Image (cartoon, rainbow, N blue to C red):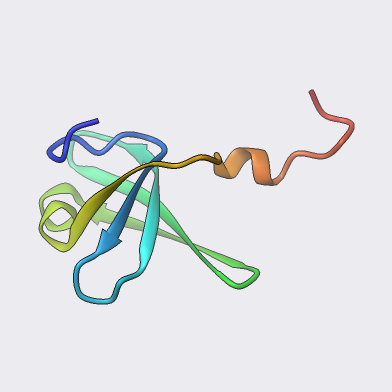
Length: 75
């Protein structure tokens, strides 16, 4: 991770709203992230430059969103 290179699993906080997002996919110019509010998960796509101006890096997530949807029967 680098503050200039968001990676999958990184958690960032919006400097204005305080909302936290986790990076789901990071491409050259677009950052895809998710944000959980109660039982609803919102997904967003951001322009990388806008994302880096609006968010501050907090660290790596302890959980992966993909794991949230696995069941006991899945490996």
